[in-house]
Length: 412
Picture 1 (cartoon, rainbow, N blue to C red):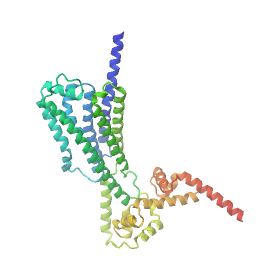
Picture 2 (tube, helix red, strand yellow):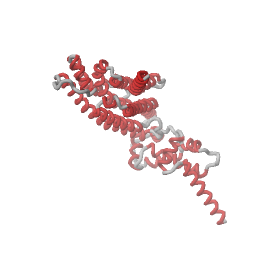
Picture 3 (spheres, one colour):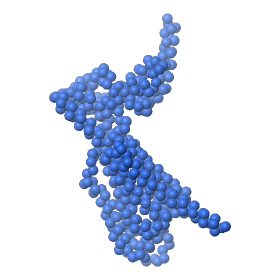
Picture 4 (cartoon, rainbow, N blue to C red):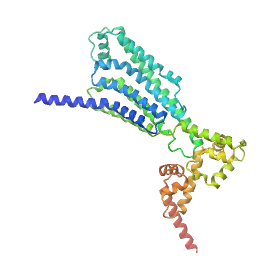
């Protein structure tokens, strides 16, 4: 009876370890397949699928460690060195494909050089080591089991040195990717706000959050490395928490990437379309004086802001001037960007509709008539401008209107 009970406990423990050891790997597999199967797949999505498969190999090595597949882990550890040191540079290039590059520039393979050289060094040592040296390195350095001998062979010492070099390279990569990735996203978002009046589906601010999540994920990995992977082998709760954190983070990367359909390629296409139309439209007026007055009259007089897809190029074509002049005028004279400037017109129009709206006008209708692409964008922009929700503003406007009507009746 006790033997059967003990066997059941061992089986449950193995099942628990297998579940959480394999979980991050299957998340990568799930999104890799889903991204490749996406009918709206673009270059960044295809690249992100590749990133997911590289990361899958990384977590496959983790699984081999926790499942005590020693021979498999001993070999895959050398591959893990490459995939770990390649993951952050690869994700940085994914950001470039979203914000800057319309095709893969193979010169950027140079960012994988540290990963390749460190992995090559690790593989060289692996094939030079004897079986005894390899087991000593794996059991003593990876599983932190007590050493049977005080004398550590040179090749084992070199492998330990490689692990320390790996940690420094990894830490430097994380910082560089966070800095330069955030900069790329900020510059791209600046282009968007100067060109589009509606950033829905285009804005990449959420990717800044992903980069921060990458940073915290690396901190978790760093703490795990300091404690040692073996620390989690017999500690179920910490092991499950770490696995869930990594799985959730990977799922978030895949989820956000799968919904990002508009990228730098779409922006450049819209700019190219504008330039073609400008050539067909004849000579361009290069003066900037009085441009702000012309812009206000054009947008407000014709209610162009009610077009949710309004672009700065539309105004440039109407005024026969360059879009850069318009952007510079709005930035300098109004201390804002094109997107926020147009949204200010939309919010004011929405406020007018709320003050004089018939009962049948819903918030969705007000948002649509004001030029907002959807109700969520309307609520977000309105709250940013008015510091309150549209519903609250409408109730206050209605209350104020009733009070004014009462005062008017008393006066009469």
